[in-house]
Every structure is written in structure tokens, then in C-alpha cells.
Picture 1: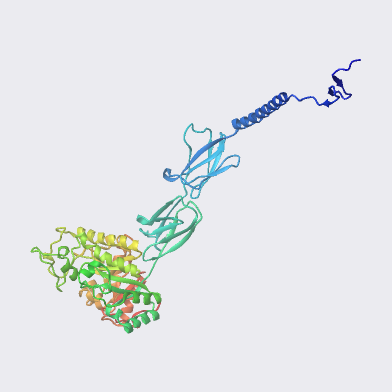
Picture 2: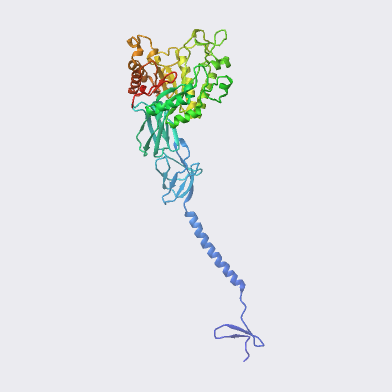
Amino acid sequence: MTSSPLAHRRDGLEIFSGRHGRRFKRRRNWGQIIARALTVAVVITAVVGGFLLFRAITAPDVVHLRVLGAEGAPVAGATITSPSGAHATTADGGMASLAFEPPAMLSVTAPGYRPASYDVQAIPPSGPLSLQMEPNILQGRVIDGAGIGLPGATVTLGAVTTTAGEFGSFEIVAAEPGTVIASKAAWEPTEKEWQGETGRLDIVLDPFVVKGIRVYSPVAGDDAQFAALLRLADSTPVNAMVFDTKSESGQVEYDTEVPEAIAAGGVFVKYDVVDRLAQAKAHGLYTITRIVAFQDHYRSQYRPELALHTADGSVWLNNNGLGWMDLTNRDTWQYPIDLGIEACGLGFDEIQFDYARFPTDGDISTIVYSAGELDGAARVSTVAAFLAEARDQLHEAGCAVSADIFAIVLSVGDDQGLGQRAEELSWAVDAISPMIYPSHYSNGWLGLDNPNDHPAEVVGDALDSGMPRLDGGALMRPWLQGFSWSAEQVQESILTAESSGSGWMLWNAVSQFEPAFIPDE
């Protein structure tokens, strides 16, 4: 039997048998193998791709969201949460992106805003989905102990600061719970916690009650005499000193750097203001500087075009031969304000303007004002405007502002030719200081033969008449007479002022005060 080239093994494997008896494995069909592998790969790819496509088709859309707050402003830091618990936080522009499938209920929280829920039924075809939030609003008043509003008070909550308006009312929008701090120049600051409740928040401020003495500049320049005043303050309830930095003649009595003062030749250094302020502060004293505003002989000679003048063009002089600056010309205002700003920078707590008024001594009928003829209302509005401008600039510098006025205007209805009325000026300054000196009142005042013999009656009547007229919330802080009286009479005037809730300052031309002048606490 002839053998076939192909033989079969028992295991079925075909063996090629050649002549020489060699045996070889059958050659593989690699094309088929590759084709089969490719087929498998295609199938796997199709399955995976289909799965991914299914996931993509059925996954929630990523929605662009915008959170808006008060007055439509974007809200940064708002957290948006979907029903699945996924969340996103808005950036500075109030924008965030979050995947969810409508209809869905989104919840949103943000500092300063009420938590809110939004039932989203559809997604806008273009642009972001806007969510408007309702802000927390803190409303309240800053008031004194009698419930009278304190306009101009500063109210701070966190990073937000606002100013109380008329009647002391304030409002903070997008308010976060925390510590509310209310402050006002010449008043003690107060803190109050706010937990986010919706009711109004009233904050009561107590006035800083000044009990001060005047420091005559030559006394400030004498070590021994100034040390005696410090000892007086240490041993009595005195808590403040009033220094002069610009006198009645227009002299600037410290080493100023204000160019106008130097150019006018009015600088006469009488004490080291930095050293004396440091000493006063070391004794815990509140420091005030008195600046004579518009009676200024040196400047009237240096800048005659800004001074009061007569019809013939000459500079008008009062009975003491001193010139005045024209208060109706706003170009005269900045110089005394600049001195106040410098004094504030040196460390004074309060700037007190004296002679912020129209002149009364001399032949005032010959005065020509740049504003022309003036009636009482024009005079008052001019003085109030100057003081308001000074207040705005000096508050920015960090100082309280006060003004000295004639005490007579508290007891009469008009301005007495001065441009001073308590109603208007109380809106322009932090404290008003009427100069209540019974020795300056005429016999017969209040039916008294000699008003100087009746400290309590004269001081009490002036304060009782004037305090209800402080519509703008300024403090009443009188100058009291520290001369030509016994210690008992000085004490009587001080106790009368204190009984009305006022602070006081004691005036003596050369700062000669006795400890017996000052009543104990």
C-alpha cells in the first residue's frame, strides 16, 4: 500500500511526511487570526462606546448659574446644592456651574442672605440661570440716653460701615450676624451683638463728658506751671485740657508747617506742642486745641484781598485794631481748617473753632462783604457751612469738631448779628460750647441786679434754653467762668452744668486754677 503524503496521528494532527522522513508542523493562517482579532476589538469598542454614549445621553446637563443679591449685584461665595447633594460655590462674578436634571429643587446659601430654595423646571436655552436672593437687612437707630437720634454716627458690622442719617437711623443690607459697633465723635463707642433677628436694633451712646481746663500758651511753655496743671488734673475729676494753637490776634503759637501761617509772618512758638501732648496723654487727658478762625490780623495784612474791607478798599479793623478775614469768601476757610488738620495729626483729639462768626466790635456798618448785604439767615448758613466743611475734613483726619458761641444766642431767637444759632450749628459740629460768663451779662438779666452773683441761675437758664434747640445732635459743653469768683461760686456753676448732663470747660485767661474750684465726683 502506497503511503499518502499526509498521515494522521491518533490525536488527529496532520503531519507532513517528506522523503527524508522529516516531520513539520502545519503552517498557521495569520490573516485569519488577525481578522478574528480585529472583529473582537470592534465588538468590544462598540460595546464600550455604546455604554459611554448611553451614559452621556442620560447624564445630567452642566448648568451655568448666576446668583444675584441686593440691587441685582452678583453674590460671591454662595453655595448651590442639587438634589443629589452635588454643590458648587459662586466666584466673584456670582457665577458657578452645577450638573443636574430639571425639574430639580436647588438650595442656595450665602453670607448675609436668607437661605432659599428654587424649583427649577427648565434650563434657559442660552445664558446662565439666574437665582435672586433676599438679603438680611439690619435696621436700627443710634440714640442718646433720652432716645434722641444721633445723626452722623458711624455704624460698623464686619467689613460694612455706614453712617446714621437723620434721626440716627441706619440700615445695613446683606448683613451677617456679629458685633455691631456704633461710634460718634465726642461720644463713647458702644458694641452690641446682633444674632440676625429681624427686629430693629437700637444702640445707645453715652456722651464723653469733658471736664476741662484752659491752658494759656505761656503756661504751656513753662515746665513748672504746666506740671502744676497736670497735678491739678491728677487730683481732681479734670479729664481734659484745652490748648491754644492760634490766638485772637492770629498768632500761631507752635512750630507749624502750614505754609500760609509761615508766609503771613504769624508764627510765634510759645510751647512744644508735641512734648506737651505726650505729657497730657501720659496723664490720661483728652486734648482739645482752640483755633481762632476769622479774627486774624496777620493774615488780613498778608492777604488783604481776602480780608474784610471798607468801601474805600482799606482793610477793616475792629476796636482793638485787628483785621478779620471775610467769612463769606470761601477762600478764607481752608487756612484754619489746615491748621486743624495739622493739629489733629500732631495728636489732638478735638479741634475747637473760636471766632467762627461775624465781627461785632467796631464800626461794623462800614464793612463790605464779598457776598454783599447779608441777613440773619445768610449769616447763619455761612457759619454753619464753614463748620460743616471743617467737620467733614477733620472727621476724615480723625478728630472731633466743636465751636465756641456766644451764650446769649441760646436765650434769644435770632443770631444777634453773629451768624450763630444753636439749631443750625448743632448739625455742623460734634459739640457746641457757649461761653456762659455771668460777669458778661448786663444788670437786670433774668431780673437779677447783678447776674455775676448768681452762677446757678445764669448757667442753668442758658443750658435749659439751649439744650432743647440742639436739633442736630451736637453735645452741649459750656465754657464756664474761672475768674472773678470764689471757689464756691465756680463749683456752683460746674455743678449746675453737670446736673444738666453737660460737660464743661473752665476758662481763665492765664490758667490760674485752684483745686478748690473743682467739685469732687
